[in-house]
Length: 382
Ligand SMILES: Nc1ncnc2c1ncn2[C@@H]1O[C@H](COP(=O)(O)OP(=O)(O)OP(=O)(O)O)[C@@H](O)[C@H]1O
Ligand code: SF4
Ligand SMILES: [Mg+2]
Image 1 (tube, helix red, strand yellow):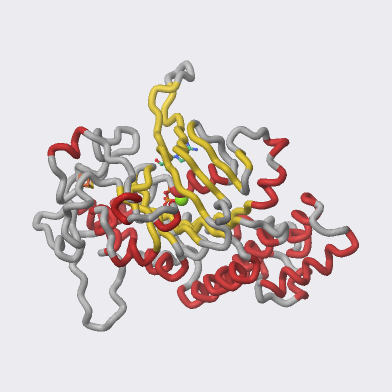
Image 2 (cartoon, protein in one colour):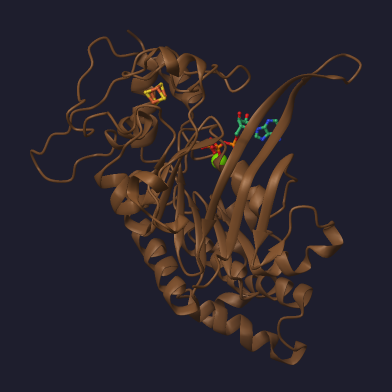
């Protein structure tokens, strides 16, 4: 059996959130907390969870764009956790990032040809004499005409710019691409095209993707496995069919109940959770979800549940495992039975809406954070 392309063990990252007048840290946020998973070559792991749960931080940690404060990252058989910047060249070449706003990520003063040739020169991927041909080849790969090489980013639409960003990531022949909300800023009509392009490129080149998205409908389309994050931790991870078909964590129930139901007339009961959204600065003791969990018991307030599942599913490989961080995962009924809870909280309604929203790229980051949603709600005339 081949070893995974990426293995992550107990990965953590804290940020200083506040400092005293003398620069001493007075508050920290644990953006990523004890995260462990593995990713096989040629497969896609989606990271989902509400805004601020640590998806982007985790993606950047994996690429060593920021340093972890705990844990271990093993990429392609090599421990890259503590490598110095000067030693990271192989990782920089083999693991690339495509993020949400392709306009911000492309230098407006460079032609597309220069943008695509830059990484070729940096990593010495192809001989200088072959670079122009490689640029044309990259453009063809992402469905653009070779003449695009002479144009500037502003001369392209959002979808085309994201194709260019993908071509730039592909230039160095990576094994892994972290895609952070890669289609969230695009029109719905364009979104499917870019997703299909990513899928075709994956099949063709055996690429692995970490696919970060708020949009669970998109995740269902692209993911082999899904990891659900809550306040920096993975609370559920498993194959797409398992997580979507048999979600075991109450938080996953809430997220999934927010996906629009495509069939006309079909209804899905939305799970409304009580309680306030916890602050990342002061996460609750025990299970960090207990303040909103509709099925919490006394133990949940005291003891933090670990991610467990191998025994339950009988899976031998981590990649086949359906694991859940919930004390009650074994005893709870299937999600559709636990449907409606009276007295839901408006905060959770906002959470559900945040997952349901279709960002149109007009809202800056393209992500409707809970804070944004709350502000918009507050502004509405009663
Ligand atoms: N550079 C930083 N300094 C301080 N705190 C940070 C920093 N980067 C992230 N955080 C905090 O870490 C937590 C996780 O943030 P992150 O951006 O990873 O979340 P996310 O899941 O990607 O959210 P979104 O869906 O809105 O993109 C948040 O509480 C955020 O405020
Ligand atoms: S551990 Fe308790 S609070 Fe946490 S999700 Fe499970 S039942 Fe809910
Ligand atoms: Mg993010």
